[in-house]
Amino acid sequence: MDPFLLVLIVAGAASAFCWIASLITKDTSWVDRLWSIVPVVYVWIFAIAGIAGAESVESVARLLVMAVLVTAWGARLTFNFARKGGYTGVEDYRWAILRGRMSRGQFQLFNLFFIVLYQNALLVLITLPAYIAFQHPSPFTGWDAAFAVLFTAFLIGEFVADQQQWSFHKAKKAAGGALAPGFVTTGLFAHSRHPNYFFEQAQWWAFYAIGAVALVADGGSWLNWTIVGAALLTVLFIGSTIFTESITAAKYPEYAEYRRTTSMLVPLPRRRRRKSPETA
Image (cartoon, rainbow, N blue to C red):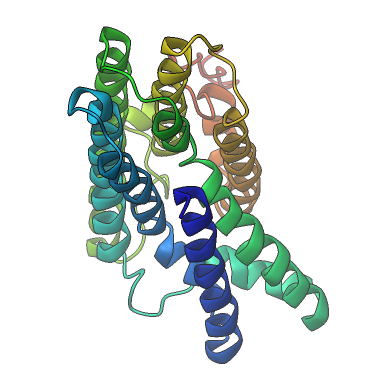
């Protein structure tokens, strides 16, 4: 069986599970609980298929590295999601807000087509550079190593950002739920309002690049159709970020100044604060 077909079958089963479970439990965060798991499964399907048909270890080294990288990504994300209570039945607060803004029928359509189908399709799309590597086996190169190191650096960056955010919220909870300004602004968050989001997206762009290396080694182009996965993930994160920030800004008046002085995603030097009339 073509591994891509097997991935589609698994994705279909995952989608059906998420939709049915959301109807039974009235909880729409089932895709969130599978988010860090199914991409690992998909990439290993491609890797195992590559190993089964390999003529040499050298020809599947790229696929194995891709599988290991995504496994590390999944382990980190699963750990972070678990410690925040994601597997204990806690629904993403944003879905509850959207549910309150829509009729029951509208929200169920949103649940089926966006939360379940679109996001599960996206989880397939971001892994397809591994399918390109499966289709175009060739020895591991310096370019592969460079992008693998880049992926690892982004993974470490996301781990650091998540840890800084976790530490802030622990301190906030210990302070009785109030810790000025109400959101984290130090560490990586002094240079990006969402450094964890930036590093998450960057990892999948590096993953795309590794798949592109396989195609280039076989006479193809750096640009190929699997770029749609990383591109759509970026679009999803930008839309999600804008929605999340609208909630935060309504809750914390200080967020407006933070948003003005700090880059949304790409870590950059913080812009100067406006002088108050007293200090001008």
